[in-house]
Amino acid sequence: MTTTTTDAPLPVCPAPWDLTGEGWIFPIYTLFSENPIALPEGSYAPLETGTSADQGKRFHGGVGMVMIVRYTSGEAGPYDELMYIPGLFSRAGAGDDAKPKYHMAISRIHVSTDTSVANGRRNWGIPKHRAEFSFTPSRGSTLLTVSHPSSPSEPFFRCLLRDSRATPFALPVSTTWLDWRISKSLMSGYEAALVQPPVPAASSASAAALDTLKESGQSVDALVASDKTYIVKPVASGWSKLTTMEPAPSDGAEEDWSGFGDGKSFPKFKLWSNSLNVHMTSFRMSFPVPKVVEGL
Image (cartoon, rainbow, N blue to C red; front, side, top):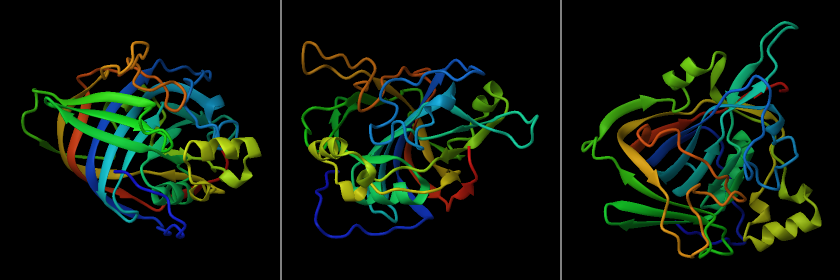
């Protein structure tokens, strides 16, 4: 799905959203540490890095996921999405002796429309940026490339998606896609919800940062702010198969797509296992009105 930016005001699409589409879920895992550990390079966009949106100093590893979604309908219209949830972040528990709570958060996310960018940031504090998506079927697999709007022929993410022969037929599934039983067994205190701190507006960035955003093809009007910390728990149901993600053949001799991202506009990562991935061939997802969290 490719969209062009116009001078018309972007529609306001408040929560909740009821969406349908197709998606791929790829678990990733970093050894959990009680002490904070470093995030991979590219986990936050420059606009969010070092701001209230950046939870990097409270990252502890554990279960995370990469998601690729093609929404066919919803309050913000159809759009494509590439999302990075690196693992578990901490926030203080209640009381002086309370143990910290651990939650997931979307740290890097690209979508194909400015309407989704603006409303995702405003409604839930999700740090969306716009990108160009290309899905090309090829010999039983699909080549996915994601690039900045200004340079569609120079992807920063590239992979091959291929359904597993182990599931020739789609099976019904109903899940929050965050509330994984295996995740809870690996992490006590794990909270099956996204906690998204406030995100800044492009208008608050420096002149140099604004120039960089414009050069990459971003619409600065879509990069709006949120001023609260939100907690939200999406719920989805649909039909699914097992799937795999494989490195895409390189277009150039020096390109290495074994980590799927370029390590700058999207972090490099390794799959937890290429036998645990899910292709939701069709789904219905509810993204509810978030609750407000007081501090982190």
